[in-house]
Length: 358
Ligand SMILES: C[S@@+](CC[C@H](N)C(=O)[O-])C[C@H]1O[C@@H](n2cnc3c(N)ncnc32)[C@H](O)[C@@H]1O
Image (tube, rainbow, N blue to C red):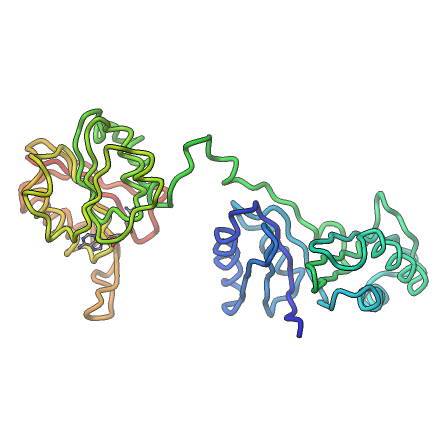
């Protein structure tokens, strides 16, 4: 049984999951049950949705996307044999292409089905011409008969050329060699250090709490070298982090369990991106800073408006309240709040707080 799909999307190979997430985020606003799936073919995704195929295309075309290279609507999905393709494409064309219009057939063939793209284009072209009376115009057609072959499955659309939408892939070109971040969190640290470059000076030792998978550590390590980054997290670091920096020490512990013997001496910076409610995160971070941060040293903490697992409710009414409560706690414990940043890379429920130990 073929599982029908309503749009086919291409993206750069290796970024399929980023593109799936991006499309689900965009399309779920209109269809909460939308499914976007990678296929066997690199850089090819299918969209399953109750939305009209053209509406899917328009929605994605209008959205600000990073990963989508091309999107096409799909009206019918059939088995990959030439007769089924011709029959279905012709039936669709009869409904959509008027006699006085022009059309062209375009086939993208992936896998190894027993026919070529040319076979499809010639046979479907002949059949559609006879059935509709429309004429072929390969250069500037009014309609496209669009055929996407994915080995055993074929998606077909009869549509206008403006519905086959190509978009600029922003993310892949965005990173110069060696600048591709480990994750989105790394961008927060990158952005913060642009505004507050004094935080990560050469030779400064850092404790990074809740470090895994290592975006912050990865951003900090080359800036503070030969200073060390003590990455504290029971979870794994991304292999690139340990491979690319010999000044990173992974301490597989919870922040609360850090002992004097884990870190020789004091550090100049404590960073904290713990996924805990803001009050707990502040307490744990400040306990570590009290013990290991030298006077005049800095603390960076993400303040997150998060759901308290014990009550099932948000730990504060809004992120501003979470920030105020965190600021008060820092001041109570003898730290001066230097800045609260609303970074572009922060989610709407996050702020980044910078403080100094007095
Ligand atoms: C949002 S992630 C951090 C992402 C990280 N800053 C990066 O750039 O990759 C939150 C991390 O906090 C860790 N975490 C939560 N509670 C912790 C604790 N008590 N001690 C240490 N790590 C903790 C989790 O294991 C998780 O890896």
